[in-house]
Length: 340
Image (cartoon, rainbow, N blue to C red):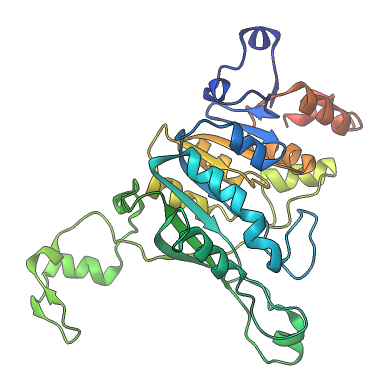
């Protein structure tokens, strides 16, 4: 990471956010900027129809309060509505809103809360502004069995390993192409492409035509994303350990934003994550040359997320914070330690 130079400060911010937002970001990269603050205020400051994709994983309505300020299930829909209104406003007509939101258990009994379904109905129901383009699901094969009382102690339930992901849009025809997210053909499919299909009707009622034998470069993926969150070492986690920073406890799994970034946007499009946490969305957007804005309310998480971007340009506030963190590093100056 590099400090903001005097010449750059005199010229003003050179990134695309310079004409979108007035506040100075905590750090900037070639394609994006990270902010520390209230997400709702940042969303309000963005111009209408200026964003192609909003993708985020907000705090869930969990039974126990977390340090990232989760909201009780009974208050969740009302709490989220102002964010939804601003997200709708800033999206382009062909833009999308992807919301990864896990379920929750009812306190004191082995039943499930309906808050995330109530939220979906509020967003897409008769009075909701959005259309449900498609529902996706994230399957985490490494999910721990919880809540322990019902799953591992009384053995009354199985572990909950699937999170819904709502793909919402302003219109029925948002920008999207599954050609950008094709998966490699399996061995059986490659054999069929080589030897040819047996055309004709199937017991299911489908009719297989000769078009099924065309090689499209890969298979169309399902609406199930399988990805484990078992990584214990990365530049981000290593930096958190080195400088005594608290890693975000509910980090986005990279496979989720990566799928939707490729599926719903093209190079140069603008992405926003209003609940960025450790800023995995920004990292993925940067990798795929999408312009991005991230917002996180807790400063410690924003500071730690900067280590995902070795070439980030830091604000004076963040430079000062990192200088304090690195001043005690043996054998390194603050800047040398921060860029290692």
